[in-house]
Image (cartoon, rainbow over all chains, first blue to last red):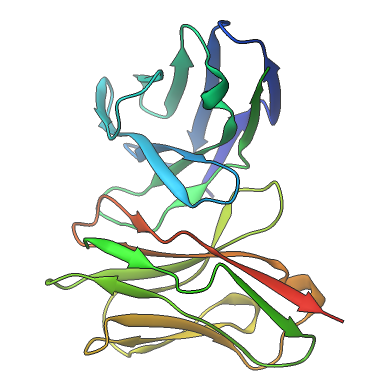
Length: 112
Length: 112
């Protein structure tokens, strides 16, 4: 069966520090991968999605970047965090050719 | 889909009472429709989906939803709610099978 792992679950980082959140999917090949951000009291904002290794599409300009070094690995990064980067970050994947998404448990990021 | 509207940010309801969470979307093409549930500090879990066929879709935990093409709606219903249904519910729509357009979410509050 397929599973998705996202870590860490919580993270407190100072302003100006770097960020690296990792997401891996098991039990499938060539998944579509997504990073979402959920700010308090708001819905989901799609940040990045990837349909293959090295293929990253950005939905909104921001202080973040994403990379897909391996088929089932998706990394969200920042060189210098801002206070406004605080939020709940969710990784998700969809099987090739399908739309239903499966989510990781999320990372609560607090920038202080 | 151009947008997804969840008309209620919060819905309070007494335990064992019925509930309906509303979702409307705007699109001129055929769409795929989804409802997801998010328990506190967790990722999202698929409740049910409409891809084609019968407009009444049954999902997990006793929830169901009905696709109404003429009204561009996909309302979620449960005949009798429980305390364990306390969560945030998200409606999502996809036109292209790649990207999901998300509603802002509805918090279901169960009153004892």
